[in-house]
Length: 296
Image 1: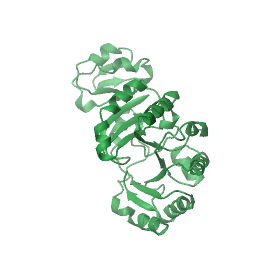
Image 2: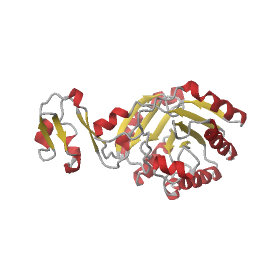
Image 3: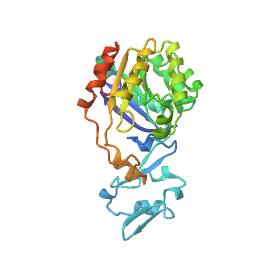
Image 4: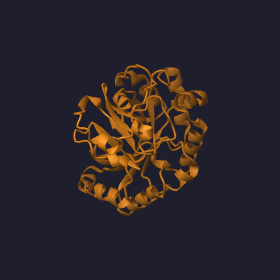
């Protein structure tokens, strides 16, 4: 299930790229900036600030959406067919994130950008959510892109069963792997995940000599200290064939989405990390022979 296709992107890979954002993620990172990507089902977003009170959403789902003195109230669990609400709101205060798209439809969007790929050495980046958690259509798309000689990057946490990764071997140009931490307890506490699964998959990818760029989200109270970052960088440098590492500063740009989704942002009121704070980490990574970059 796809929740966004972003054309003419200059991030998350070389050159001009088409970003395909998939829904569904096995992790629950406390700082997640794309909360609409977590569920594998369509998500309802409601922005009360731009609601005009036309009432079309109420007519479309009268048992789940009501109007009271405080404005529109949405009982999300009571919405059995969220895609029926996709285009009912004229003011776009209520939107639906996520729809099933055929591989042919995705390719049609991608092919609009082919001239930009050729000029900029760009391509397609699959993101999410966790793109590797998708079904057989993902492999089909990768095969079609390989036939068209289009560069493909995949942003992944690698928190999936190895067979989900193995089916993509030879079809992905670059894996952009989020290496959030290497400490088992801290990873579990902040993401509800199993770091052993991630590290095992990462080592297997290295063994297959796949092209990998490691990306470290630098997050306050999680890994934003020299002591913790040195351990992560040391581990990265120990992996054969890994040559490049990116440091991604934590930001708060996605917080408003939690309100729109009716979700609680549990990470508190921590400030964004300024890129200048990452200089010591970059310098240390350079001493380990790694190519470095700040940002995606």
